[in-house]
Image (cartoon, rainbow, N blue to C red; front, side):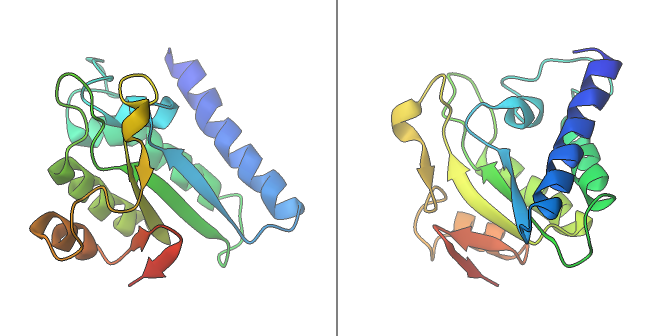
Length: 161
């Protein structure tokens, strides 16, 4: 994707959020898992760009940040913005790991995202490993504790703070 295509894609997310507001929705979820577009920006396995959209975790996060900020400019302050985030891509070589997911979760919290749904897997490499909740292991484990410290974490459909 070139710069114009990336900007157009980010704008499409905010336009969709605007339509959700007009339709009476009280929130949206940005799907950043399972090998879809935003997951491909976030994952070091998929994202091999050498420009401002790839390389470091901050650069790989840039597209999602742009999407969120664009949405925030289109929706009321009380409109919920949630994110479905992989904690493990299950790709042949390292992609999103638990540690990287924790880093991204901190960035999402800083941006004011209301909730993170923990997920994992990729429709390309591990469609049988895709799940909701529980991807970080047991709820009392160290990886879970690290994600929980971000202040926004969802298990299945239950939001816990």
